[in-house]
Length: 111
Length: 115
Image (tube, rainbow over all chains, first blue to last red; front, side, top):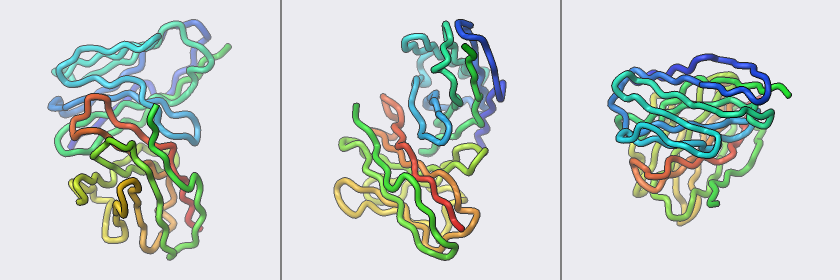
């Protein structure tokens, strides 16, 4: 059974800092991995999707990497801003059709 | 940008009542999903739906739950007799393929409160 773990559970940084969020998964036979953002009480906003054949994806200040063999992904956020404050969720698609989510990292960027 | 639309945004219901949560997936998507998130917990998979039938369901999705695509645009989740523990945020999602090129698009959710 696929398990997804995200570290740290919470992170507080000053504005402008670069930061890394970590995601690990137990079953490396995945089809893809997707990073989402969730604001309090709101839905899931897709940030980046990495297919199993890819190593990384970039969108603006965000860069996500994938190392399937070690079961790890990182989300790098450059020059963080207060508007980046949210919970960041990692989800993997392995066998079947379901996404398996981690518990998320709650990020606070202080002005 | 295309969106997945969910209604209502918030529903309060009495224990034992039936509820229907509604979703309009992205129009050219073929795969539809329901997930739920109990407050403070992980987002959990409930069911996936393709070609007018369930393709996968989780252990959570018991006989109290059902899904339907009643017409060409709506996708619904019905809970027949709600329990207190059904209180959660329910998310609908859709994708263009089983292994989508562009990922899964989620709606903004329906917060279900069972009292």
